[in-house]
Image 1 (tube, rainbow, N blue to C red):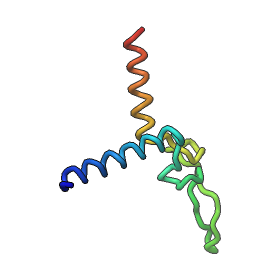
Image 2 (cartoon, helix red, strand yellow; image 1 turned 90 degrees about the horizontal axis):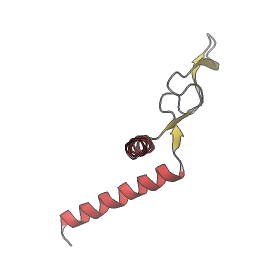
Image 3 (tube, rainbow, N blue to C red; image 1 turned 180 degrees about the vertical axis):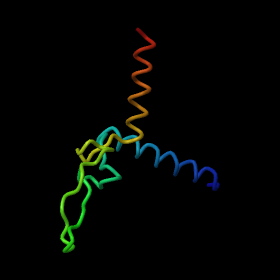
Length: 83
């Protein structure tokens, strides 16, 4: 088996795996707040306390995955074009 065929098979497996992941779990943890919904601050003694709500995920801790966002946009465009 050639190197190009092996690389193509690997990319196909990775792409299909990500598509299945987006289908089964369309939401992932927010990268800014690590899925907590807020930032952690420390007081003057060094004890952690709750900070402001995360603006990126609106304090839910979840964000839509990039692949699911692309699929939703494509589906919406297709539905709008076939009406």
